[in-house]
Amino acid sequence: MRLSRFAILGVAVSAMVGCSEPSDGPTTPNIPPLAYVRYINAVPDTLGTTVRFIDQVEYSPISWANVQFRGLGQGNYQPTAAGARKFRVFTYSADVSAAGNTNILVDTTITFEAGKYYTLLHLGYARAGSTPKQRIVNIVDALPATPAGIAFRAIHAGLDVGNVDIYATPTTTDAITGTPLLANVALNTVSAYLTRATGAFAARVTATGSTTAVISAAAPAGTAGSASVDPLGGATIAGSIITAVAFPATPANSAGTRFTTPGVVYFVDKQPPRTTPNP
Figure 1 (tube, one colour):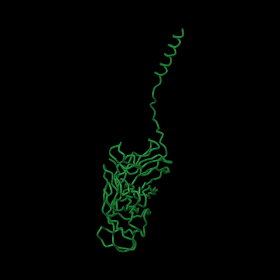
Figure 2 (cartoon, one colour; figure 1 turned 90 degrees about the vertical axis):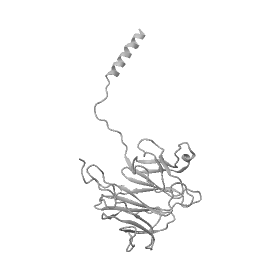
Figure 3 (cartoon, helix red, strand yellow; figure 1 turned 60 degrees about the horizontal axis):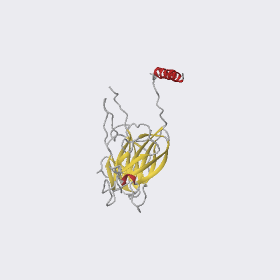
Figure 4 (cartoon, one colour; figure 1 turned 90 degrees about the horizontal axis):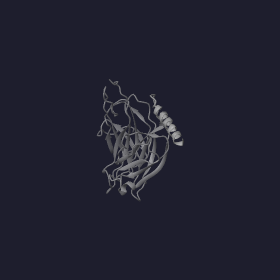
């Protein structure tokens, strides 16, 4: 009798399971509020770096791996769950079991607000006894409205370069005259965005009060889009928003990518809009 009761119950449960069918209706993913985060390596005296968010897997940036000095983490801005987020920066090694992957350069928590864009600028020296000591500078990127020409800003990450003036000239060899775009810019300064007409230009960095360039770098021209290709931001493409970062030279006997002189690297903060509709 007891066995037959269990058999009847099993049949009933099986019937219920068999009748349960997945819904054909749409499902809505539970996406949390998101911020948008990128990483720039401005540490000149160590190996490439790897950044890992360690508090959660979902809605965290894909690990930025082997980001070289003067480099940008893969993918530029990455969607990231807003709130207090914990991450670490390691020295890079291709061997995940190697000691280099346990060499923690930064272990910190930063709070990101939903809808905002951030640049994590890894600035300073990693070697013991060197100053300033490496750290993460959290920059809120207040992207302007899409400009009629282009929008341009500068970040001074040039350790040991001192305060600078920044000029814009048509090429890297033109004489520097007139008033600088940005005057007496100190280390770790992030300028406001300036608007410019489209056209080739070069950033010329001088010691404050001087007209002799210590760094000269032409802005990328960019590429116009088409019906099938998205445009790429640059000085000649309307709607581009770009940041120029001044970096130091590499100290002697440093590991990783080496540069014998200070330099400027341009990063596209926002690509220009497509002017030709998709076919």
